[in-house]
Length: 203
Image (cartoon, rainbow, N blue to C red; front, side):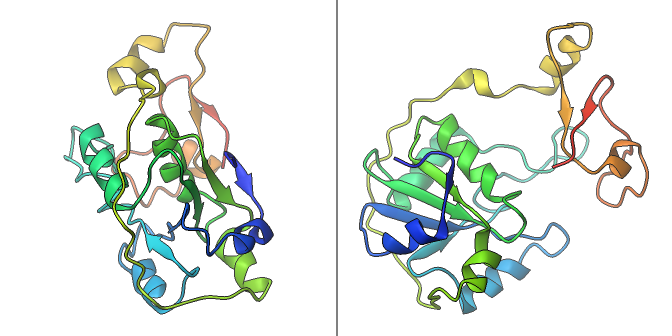
């Protein structure tokens, strides 16, 4: 079982294994449909596209939620079943942003109890650099039954964070750039700066 990082070589050796699923998570926040269009032209053979906005999040509510709220567990269970994932399936995820988008699906699967999920080392750029095969064919998986065993304590709410402000045993990490942490050059969020007490840890 692979549950963290997996090499392109190992991925290539298992492209034809029916118990492996491959997911393309390429995405650009400012051009949300761009990478799906690129996926349609070229992707790993047998890969499915997991859209950050449409598959891995629900619409945000201004002033109430963050940019990409988590879907309800039952919605994810149905989606993962449609994607042909059950307990016997090894999942591999990749993107072209150093894993920044792929890790969301990685975390969501782990959150619901599916441990056999890994991010491909180097992602799409390394796959292309190594001259490995690509495809434009649309893969339609056979549906399987995804059984969740959720780790509910893995997620927290904004209220939880507020309650942690005075707790010396809790650290909040801000993975954005140091500029955005300092409230400089903020081009994405309506309010610049960071959560009080958060430590800057750029991805």
